[in-house]
Amino acid sequence: MPRIAFLELLAFLLPFAAWVAWRLLVTRAGRLLESTPWFALAVAGLLLVCASFLLLVWIEPGAPPGAAYVPPHLEDGRLVPGAYRRAP
Image (cartoon, rainbow, N blue to C red):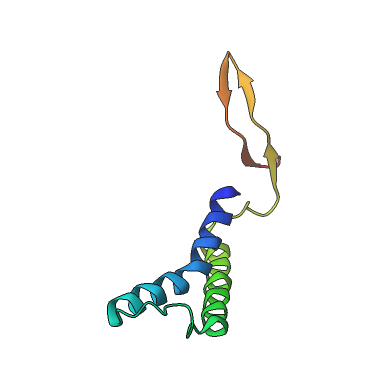
């Protein structure tokens, strides 16, 4: 879950970072924050977050229909990770 939250935060901040990089390359003025299009950057960031959520839902495989979750457990002193298994 922290990985997903970090990626969403990164997707939101990406337009801001791109704008600052562009602004620094184009101008040498010290007035970087005075003419910042905050609303447009926030909307672009939120659109990227929504797109990344949709991409996450589309790419991440879910449990197959009718599957039961078997939690992690020990077998012969070996840790077996949790997984979804077909119900009998």
